[in-house]
Length: 323
Image (cartoon, rainbow, N blue to C red; front, side):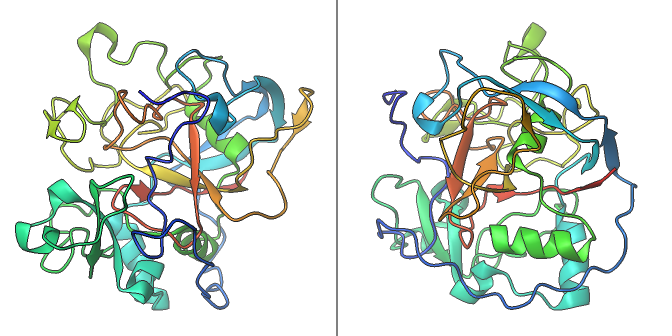
């Protein structure tokens, strides 16, 4: 396992050339589509806000990721989607607005090598540090494993191959927004204080599977003991104490904040929103490709980031709205 003080960015392959070492400039996406209406509370959960302890100093954590220090944060009430945005919901957005995702603009997106047919996997460019990712030409939200793949049977699965730009455009159209990192963590904790997961400290309490992550030996063998080799329906597994599904595992979820590991003085922070500028956006929650041996970022305080135009087959989002 890597030195916890300097963990590799294993979880989120950046956009641009798969062999590039620097993140590209964000794609120009023009003016976001206008909101279609006021946000509907249907499918959303009202959270009361208040003060909670954000961050962790857990021995399993990654200090280099800025998971600590533990700090009191105070939030106003807000609503949050009970589930990640589905393929069906994103399809409705595309049908109404004609939105073209960043993956479609670039002509490719990252797909886990094990999900690609041999013909597409052979010769596909791969990042040097994370060779289990393939830069698959033609991969996009409606072709998650590249040309020839479809969303058949996955309408209720989370949409993937969406960049931060795409997620923000959808949220605006829906009359919502992306959650701040503080809102996301408060929601993920489900009312529990300083627990490792949304349901407590044990990964599989009583032997029960509570999330969709990599089971087996990463990246060579996934036993799929939890029932899923790839994404799962957005309402799979038990919800947390707030009634929210899959806040750990399944897909990473974009947040509104720019990435930073400097969280300021440990005093009550009122509705923190991260730095004003940056190069990468925060992404939270882990995915079906996370495994303790390498990633271990499906814990509620774990965090990573990626450039706003990057996309992959394990990243999606959910939205929030005012209370």
